[in-house]
Image 1 (cartoon, rainbow, N blue to C red):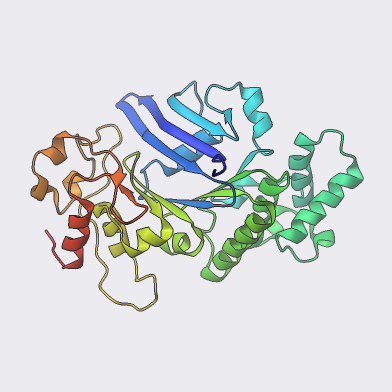
Image 2 (image 1 turned 90 degrees about the horizontal axis):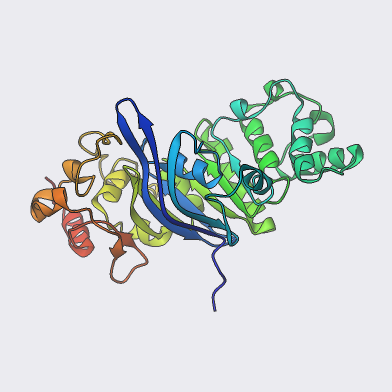
Length: 341
């Protein structure tokens, strides 16, 4: 019998009321994640990736947002739990690495103190010597050279890559079961990016953490993810193992994302292609399949694309789930044969 998933997200819906209308930021997202595995979430800006992550962390303000569905971490329901209960889970059971480490760190306190404070929240009886030892140990684990000397320095005295390492140290100081990394390498050069990804992988191997990696970079996903979820207009349009997704993407939107980047194998084969149009407003999401106004195959299905919302369904012979009215095997065949609109 397989182990129970660490994280279960079931039909998550998050919307915000604005003067212009209701923003459906997340619209029926469901997935599971096991310990020791990495789920990559990709999609264009505004697809709902970060709102999904923030809501899992309990950071979406329920006073300004309507939140429905279920989020269970280690069997404990997060949705509807008290603020105090969620605060106890945050840092100890789940933690988040944000995109901009300079904004995540307090410029007035040394990095050693900030790591120690994150530990003390869940270990209130810890003495000063223990806090210092924990901070130095975490700095060493994330590859900060000379931790004894640098623990008393401030965030502005570190490079961008080193600041991101400090943020990861703060997130992992209490050995959380779930780590959510929201665009953790976006502002870093490729060499530092590779180092950060290797660091996250080594820490996952050591602690057995589950990781959700949010990014627009398919190269990063190919490097570290076990499974991939593709989001569009607040919905998941494809979910698969990383191997199946990169070998045989099943949804036209996923094919579009693949075509907009250089070949992932470094061969340089093929020309870059763009997805026509722009992502839809989440206040006025198109009826039916939200991708149909930009999809080159919508005319092959007819009115069903614009009137009926497709559900995720299995793709034969793979681990993939795809939300497209056109049979996935047909999409693959058409795209591989070079058919275009």
